[in-house]
Length: 60
Image 1: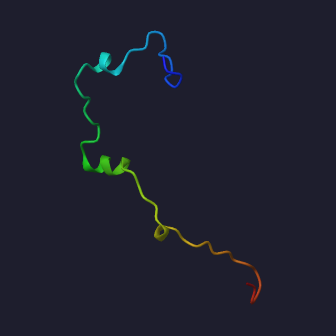
Image 2: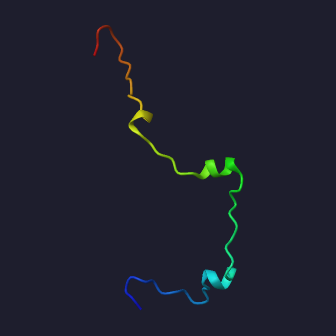
Image 3: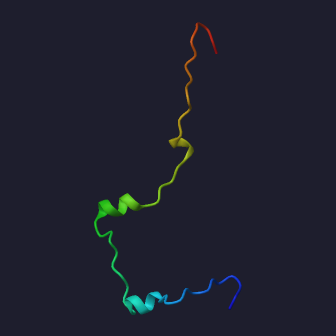
């Protein structure tokens, strides 16, 4: 056994033993649920500059 491959726990079964050769269906058939779990990208344009309010006149 490779030192990087963890040992299989006793009684553990592989995915093929559980599902056979068939592929499980996706739970995200509807467009709204696919959009809900899609990856998002954050760009510089999405960020805002913080504004701090300081008491007094002419204070910077």
